[in-house]
Image 1 (cartoon, rainbow over the protein chains, first blue to last red):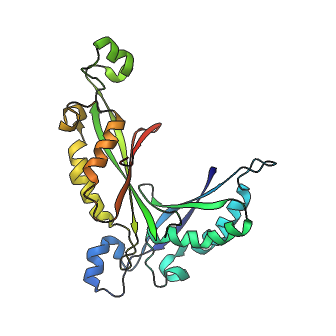
Image 2: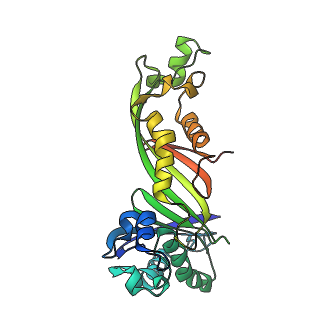
Image 3: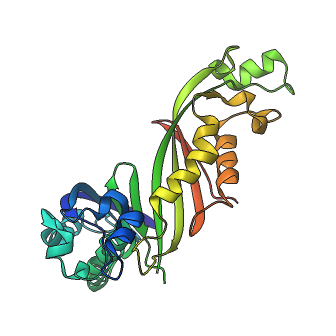
Length: 139
Length: 135
């Protein structure tokens, strides 16, 4: 089994806010991330697929195809957007890095599955070089 | 759904790789320039990976500020700008980065504010790193 990872970057804004809480509690739990005017990051998306190299091409997947589905399913929706205000999955959910990792998985998994070769193994999203979250499809 | 939250920290510390079990010559042969008598230092990068369910109210697997406080109080305050060989954990244990990664895992394992400590990675330089998952 070979694991192949492709990276892409996107830039987006967000804020953390739970509507069920008071402003004081939001500020206490989320700190500066609760600023309702939002703030932004340069995110890095890492997509890892796992499979056997094709006996003819030597590819686990075609990297060009992987780039295209990452752009179509994720970057076109999130890049240079306000995640709270412009993306359907965060109309109600808080766009934490953890939730972004799960949401990116949900966006990409059908395309990887439909291609019928490698399986999606891991999504890792860096919010900054020092902070990342991963989702591996686990329940 | 289980997710993993990772956070990177830096500590600057000195160490000398040397064991009383070996002769001076054997220490030199084993550890090379890392055995030089007065020690040397690194900017270590410490990567902490916490696994857990996303809290429905916060959207978080672990609150980063709470994690930062645990790592600061238990590890960074202890090792940053210190000589690792003088730490009680390394009195009878060579402060290799293997042993440092295991020591850090031990210091953090029972103190996670949420979720489970999955893995500690310590990067000694940009070109080498060591991981401990508590195994």
